[in-house]
Length: 447
Image 1 (tube, rainbow, N blue to C red):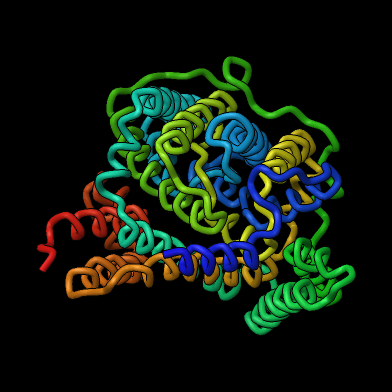
Image 2 (cartoon, rainbow, N blue to C red):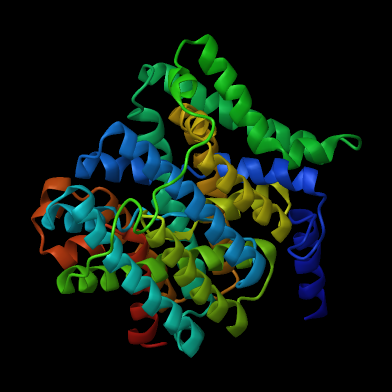
């Protein structure tokens, strides 16, 4: 037992150089926080939603700004005051269909948007109350042992890989597919080289490791500029300072019963998604996910979504990609994430800065994101391999992985033809895989 603990400690020391409670200078925190922000693609969700509901370009820009500010406030709430783990919050992809559907079903425009935000607000309040009851941690304790937790983490990494490669690289709106593949491979290679230099060099090595993500993104963007596929025209046109949309000033809540019920279901799926993120962060940082962390995390999730609805944007949730960045850089300090939250707010108040973030070619982000997904998946695999694998465990692991792949490649026209509630659930492969892993572990006989 002592040997195992020593080995685990040595592995932890090689992985994490700065722990969650360790202090990092604000200068370093800002640099590290910036690369967490750059790797998150937070602007993608509001861009998609704005396109689906028919917002004007001006409304789309304001929605993106509101999303940045909501992500920043929620990250500070979660990492600084409530959960107190290095967790970055950003716009979740899960509610996209529901938010757009509610908006259009209630007349579209800002009137329909008010119905979507009202439903989102009610759901967020109930999530916050759930956190105060302390019931969610009992569910985790009973239904998510290490075999299930490891499988969920592995599925989180696996489910993000197609988006990293297919959406960001193969289907990129700019450049040819050959150019995008080249940029993705180049960016990923630079990040790996930076990490290697970080571990090999005695002087200056730490800088290469902790800044490996931002070095890769900046280099990839410079190369993209020489290739003629970095468009900065939107940055030149954007204003330096502009206000986000606010409740009562730009829109008003309206409350529709069916919309509220829909969003409540979405929030259940959202909690399943964010639990996978917490498990991934817990494993990477070697911080046990105890009762206090879980209860405060649910409260923080609810409060973050309340802030998002007051700012007129979609619900926020913990991003799994940041767990991979922690593993790559070795820096798990909460101060870095508080700095990232502050940067989100600064970028959200500046149309020019938020436009600058959105100009980074998706292929460049995809090269980094794909590697981060692999790191997350291997983090889950490390947990799985600590369990003795019998016939039951094979099914608990393999069936959720099969479901992830099946749902990721489910034809979109068939998905749209399903009943609304099933459509929302099937739109979240992580949630379905998590539910399957939990159910199989409970229902299959141990022998």
